[in-house]
Image: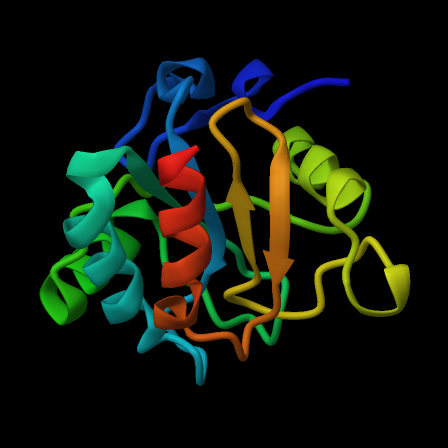
Length: 161
């Protein structure tokens, strides 16, 4: 079975990023949007990044416009919004689809490894989170209503492994 380290994605600033560079780290992968009711979760994600980044956590944000067209901006607008409003310093990637025929292959793999409510694969909304173990396998999927702060115990557990 493939791990998240087998994939690449375009960074928000342009350029291919091999996710293999995160090998051995715990990852928190999140589909984000700038005009969503859950957008304030950027602050919680940034707090996790700052609190645990030095211990081996990498938060990775993937903007997505598939839910209510809540991420309409281009890369420059997304980056400026995240920096100005939430001081986001964790890696952000280019806008992706997470569902459907054009879903990014990383998200196809994440959804295979961790199904959602009622065992469905599709992502229901912005700010769905996937916590990934150091070996590149998905530990758990969290819905949009789960605040980033609620993941601290699981993050600490995976960092200690």
